[in-house]
Structures are given as C-alpha cells and as structure tokens.
Length: 89
Image (tube, rainbow, N blue to C red; front, side):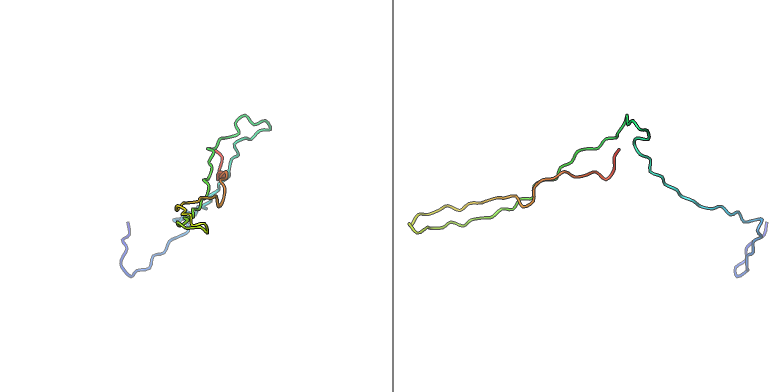
C-alpha cells in the first residue's frame, strides 16, 4: 500500500474513483390519492386570542362638582381569528 508523503502530489486513475450522482428528491404525498377520500387527514384547530388594549381614566371632577372614581376601559383592537395549519397530518 503506498504511503502519502507531505508535499507529494496525489493522482488517481479513473478506475479508482467511483462517480455516484447525488440526487435528493422529495415528493409530497397527498393524504388522499384516490377520487374518494377515506382519510382526509386531520389538524388541531387553533384560534388566536383577541388583541386587547386598556385605557386608564384618571379621577376627575365634573362641572357639577361631582367626583368620579378612576377606572379602566378595555376594548378589542383586533378580533380573534382561526389560525390555518402549515400542513395536514
């Protein structure tokens, strides 16, 4: 068996090198491959939450000299919605 020496050139003959093409193919398989779908797949239903904002109202005195307590008012900025799944199991 030949030894490799530092600085020496290494040559290979075509018979000693094996060429193998590397092919990676990913084909998605649908959950139903027939006309009648017996197994349409399943997903976990997910729903986003309401986006809520809250405003604090400071105590105040009106024109009739009535004192009003502080309070909070909350309101929906964007309503809840269904989240579509990235894939079907």
